Image 1 (cartoon, one colour):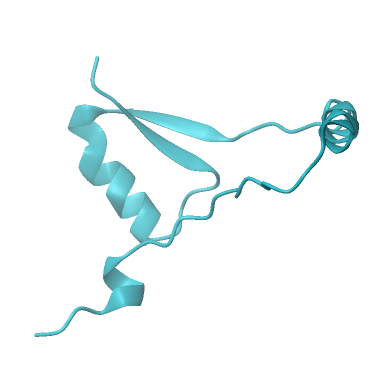
Image 2 (cartoon, one colour; image 1 turned 90 degrees about the horizontal axis):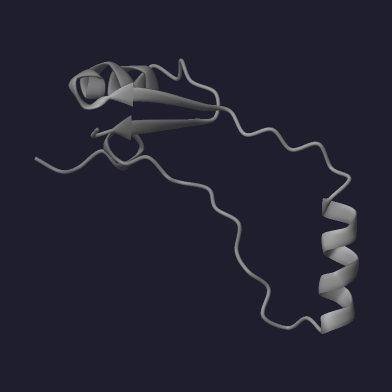
Length: 71
């Protein structure tokens, strides 16, 4: 039986670093980024709730990121 990649594998999105920048570009970017109101949406779950977190991811009942806490 083959793997159904869209069903079994969640493709993560991530920001990639840009290697070809100069110091001034970085300064300008950080100055601009300080004004952008980023508010990450993270929902934490106890380790015992891992199945619930996975179900919500599968059913697309999430916004943002899931975090499993072990302590």
